[in-house]
Length: 46
Image (cartoon, rainbow, N blue to C red; front, top):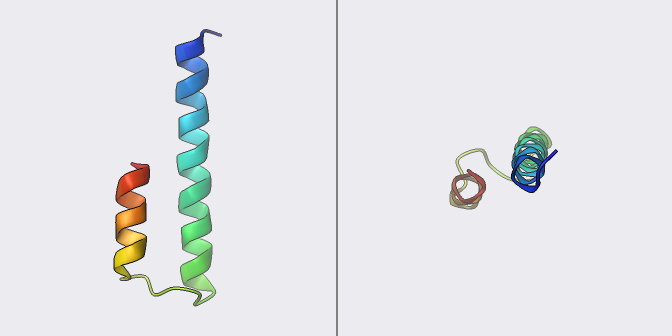
């Protein structure tokens, strides 16, 4: 696997994990789903 492919795979995995963590945080009421921090963070990850 080339370096570019490895990088893309890692980025996909990080995005998936971050989204899962954010969903868990909202579900557990650690943060509100409409929080500007969540929206900004998800936008940065994308």
